Every structure is written in C-alpha cells, then in structure tokens.
Length: 610
Image 1 (cartoon, rainbow, N blue to C red):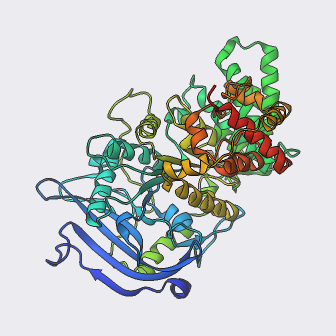
Image 2 (image 1 turned 180 degrees about the horizontal axis):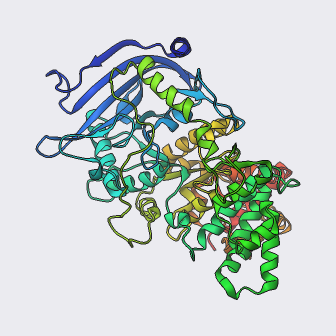
Image 3 (image 1 turned 120 degrees about the vertical axis):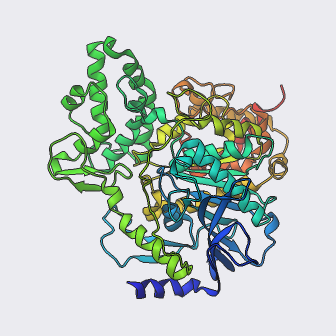
C-alpha cells in the first residue's frame, strides 16, 4: 500500500527541496509563533495552467498577551510560486462536525490531489485506494489553506487551555478568526482578496467567523463565503414535538430520494419532481401542518395521499405518522421491503441493517461507505507527499467533549447564525456567497438552506445557489464533483470582479426599441413569466408568496446596472440553476436568438426611468 501511494503521488507532484523545521523550542531564526513546519515544492496543472506551488504543513501557535501558548492550529497551505502574492486571492477552508478535520474538502474536493472513491454509492472497500490529480481545482485563481479547528486533525489546546476553551460556537469562531489574522500577518497577505468557507457545521463556523472578522472596527473584509451543504438555522434540525418546520424542510429531499430508488416520480425529471415537492412543502403541506388537529378529515386524506405520491411510502404508514415524517423514519421505511436503509449524508447509499424492525437505521451507510478511504488518503498524503514528520495521530472526527451551542447574543432557544451572513452582505458591497447543496442530503436539506438565506435583508443578487445529484459530500459523485469545481471557479471569478467591471459590461446596451419591447412583452405574458415576476416585473406575481426564493425584481436598478444582456439571455435559455441562481427559474432552450433579444429589451424597459 505504501509503495502504491508513493508511486501515484510522485507522478505529478514529487516533493523537492524540503525544508523541515523542528518543533518548539525552535531555532532562533524560526518565527517564534510557529511549531512544526514542513515545506515542499511541487508542480501541477490547474485550470489549464502549469506552474510550481509550495505546500506548507504547519502548526500555527496562538498565544495570549503574555506570549504563553494557548492553541496549536494545524493547516496545510498550497501557495502558487512565481507570482506577486501581495494581492493574490487566498481561500481558507474547513469542514464541520463540530469536531471534524478538514480531510473531506481537502482530499475530496479542493486539494491538488483527491482520493477517488466509487461514484455510484458503493462502499469504498479496503485499501489500496487511488489518489489522483485534481486539475480542476482553483489553485490557479487563489491560494488555498485547509484549516483544522482545535481538537481536530493535529490541532490541540496548549499550555493551560483545555478543550472547553475552544469547543463552542463562539469560542471556536474566535480561535479561527485569530488564526486567520495571524496567518495574514505572517504571510504579508492583508491586502489579498479573501475567501473562506466550510462544509456542514463548517458553514455555521464560516458565518460565525465572518462575524468575528467583520463585526468590529478592526475588520478583515472578505470577498466571498463558500457554504457547502449549509446549516445556518438549527430550528430546522430540532425535531421536538410541535416544531413543524423540519417536516416541510425535508419533504423535497424525501421526494428526490424516493425517485432515485424507484419508489416515486419515475415519469418526471429530477428537477421537475423536486420543484413540485418544494412548492407543495411550502404551500398546502405547511398550511396543513399549521392547523394541527383542526385540519378537516377530508383535507387530511388529501395530504396523506399527496405525501404518498412524493415519498413512495404506504398511505397508512403516513396516516399513522400523523402526516409528519421524520427523516430517520423515512430512511428506514423507504426500502424496508428490500431489507435496506438509505443514508443520511447521502441517500443514494443503501445499507443492510441487522433486522427489518425499528424506526431508524442502525448506522449511516453513506458514512461508513467512504471513511476508510479518506482516513488512509490524508495520512499517506501528509506523511509521504508533504513530508510531515509529526508523530501524533491525525484526528479525523470526534472531540470527546460537549459542544457549547450558546451564541454571544440572541435567544438561547433559537440558534441561527444566518443573521451574521445577512449583516455582512448588507455592510460589504463586494461580498458574495456561494451555496452548494445536494439533492440527496438529509443532514443539511437544500430547502432549509434556501429558507435560511431568503430572510428579509439578505442581498439575494449576491447569493449564488448550485445543486447536485448527490448528497452531503457531493464530490464523491464524479459528475457532481466536476460541476462543483466548475461552479466554484465561476463563483470566484464573479466575486473577484469589481462593480466597475460589471458596470462597463452592463452599460454597453443600445437604446430600447419600442417594437422589440412590445414583442418581448408578448413573450413574457405568453410564457407565464408574469406568474412569478408579476405584470410590472417586480417579482410580485401570484405564485411568488409560495416560492422559497423570491423571483427577480427586474425594476431593481442595482441588478439592471450590474447584469449584462448576455447574462440575461443565458439565464433564460439555460435556467437559473445552471448559473448558481434561483432554481425555480426554468430553462427555455427553444427560444430563438431574436426572441431572446426581444425578451431582453422588455426586461430592460422594466428598469427604465418612468
């Protein structure tokens, strides 16, 4: 197995001129706040460009005002060589848990190498596992720093500090923000465009870190946030009796899962079936849940049958569940007739439980289906390719201590960090947010992400959604990995544009042609665009109140001034989801170029001064 990894890794990225520094106490010439650091030179091809890059694995030591060590935070930075780094973008990435290392995003999605696990929801089996180049990651656009929070990976409390000083929403965010500030100082990168992001609880951490970085007078302003499998509002995961929100939020994920396993929706495309389930969840189903026992019997029967249509479950089972389907019950019940349970992180996976009784799976087949490969890959990559010499065990996941969920402000019974993102968007006009969601993810359902990020005050023009036919770690599915990397690259490029750049493109429009405007309006009405956008284009059509993301307001001058004709036409022809925008916006591929021009003229007229 060792020989396999060395041969595979050496084909593209053989480490050269290693600089291995001893752990503290360090030599005098070493920076005083750094523990063990190992650097190695590599060469690779990313985004079509071939170049040298430095890989630096190190423990960054956080100290108190007296210089005493408080924590050692392990990170791996990939830094492009031969360029001016002073204004080169840098992206900080981590995973979630809480209590998970950054192994998943590092070795699955965005690192220069990734572990190749089966794409079709099969178990990863035993070693050896394949490590393959990842040429579509964005190292050509931005340096990348993978960070392990305290208690994960090689990161740890130091000195008199213990886990409880770091294991909490606020405590963890403060430590990560300190790390980012210290890294920027050590590497002279304060003027670099900055991105940060995480997966799962890592999205919670990202929002909390944004508050720490941008919430005071000593700001670290950001250009973008990457939210991979988003959980910002934990009410959605609170299944206490009486909280109806989770029941609605999980229904579209159940529908997608039932369709995948051949239990429902076989005559519809995935996006169409999911759209139908989303509209029902936010409409009639929510209204029924709110009525409780006052729901008339005849209406309850209609709801039962509609839920059976979306989930493929027996109507009697749904009735016995009081029309409220818990995710774990669905995961056990859907394939009970086959003796299988579906996964929580990725419901494409199915595993055999000990027996067919009970109301929840024994364990999650989508986790044990990949963990062996990722554990082997990160350890071999760090030690054989990046030449890490530390002797401690790399902690993949698990803290062994309780997590403090209290926020610095807000109700103790309502945990949501979405307002942190809301405030940051309103106070930083260059900040963009990328939201990547898998259709088959029960841990962080996609409708919940939409719900959290369309609350009043959110700047929807700068929130970019993307959807994948996979689960929580969408990148284990090869087509979804390809799409995720392309979507991430497009997001970074968008976020790195200045308003002036977009203004120049958007303002290169000719005068409005009254005849084209008239014809465009006819198309707008004939194709039911007014149903969502309204007759005046303000996004107030009859269907708008039931939609998870408000329709575009075409009268908005900011949007008009920052959107080119080419972008308008591409979104109409290819649909919102293809451009990381509102997935409710369906594609119209049959419009001719002339018709698209007429529609564009009409949309431009909606924003013209009256």
